[in-house]
Length: 261
Image (cartoon, rainbow, N blue to C red; front, side, top):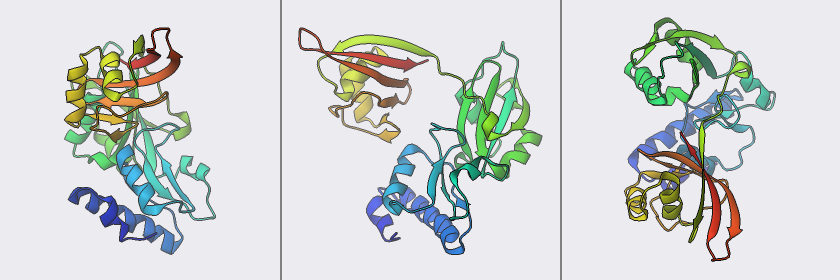
């Protein structure tokens, strides 16, 4: 661990401020030998912390459930193990919102309502919207406030309760399967196929900084991608390269892409 690495890792002044804040939180827990945790971090922010802390023993990333996109960085001393993060004193709380199934509030509706209520982005984890329900993850400190005051998302009225992390309901995403053949596994080619847009438009989206691979920004249209990678494009959505099936007789690459709808 070396605090001076912050200057090497950070790309912007905002990165430097964030990494310094994370360093102080984790280092305090380490020195006192007590649990400590950050706010929720994006995949890109988590990636920076991996360079900052390396393989520090007792350091975990945790978002409230397996496979969470936004996660906290948590330090646990040697008298605790990972399972303790699911217990009642976890730094993360899961809130269950029920609403009329005929309504269809989106992820954006919930996020906008939470931030409109004065909740900062670092206090909000994944928001998992299903039919008539939404389980979303927040820092434990703000859960009591939301239980008392968070009553609606957009025009949709909510009935809010807190559930244990083990009882969180994560809905299976709706997926449209796309079968195609590509000249190559360039990022712009995959984006073009997955979102059914022209390749030049796909390249423009990528070059303008709207694309990310597995949560990490990428501005290179010619970046080679591979099976299993998730690609998001701001304003278009998210796709996953589900299978790469090898070459066809004409030398093109057969792929199956899942688009999340």
